[in-house]
Image (cartoon, rainbow, N blue to C red; front, top):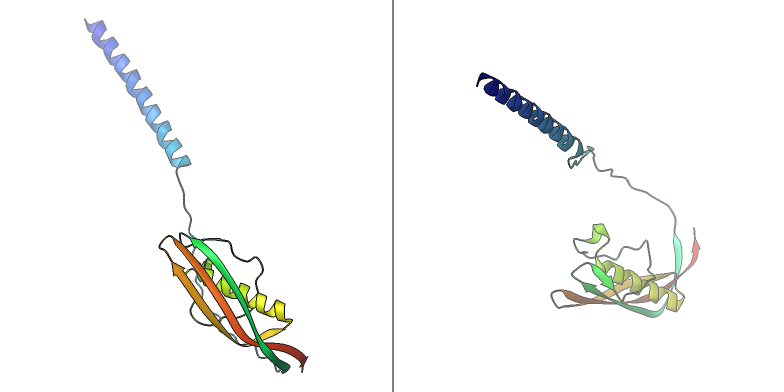
Length: 160
């Protein structure tokens, strides 16, 4: 009887040792392979700088020009059916949507495409006094954005 009790304790001790080793190994594996996210914050302050160039452009103002572009937007961010050529480096004025910093603002992209078409079709260097007419047809999950830009043709004669 005493041998059975002693054998029972040995088996139980081996089982507990095996269980403890398994739990320790499981803890090490879970710790080493868990999901990790790092965020490295960098303190910053805005840089307020002004670039001043004493250049004067002589611009010949011509006839009225216009350009039109449109795009379809699905779910507020999937753009399809729009133009593939845009005018860069132009401030379009007014408020852009909250998605503008992510490059997802459809209105800015359509304004840029309309400006490109107006400049390209007229042979202008720039649009003098551009006016944008923005039309949005919103159907909850689907939206159509159309923009027409009107202004005067501007050609740069010289820069001093």
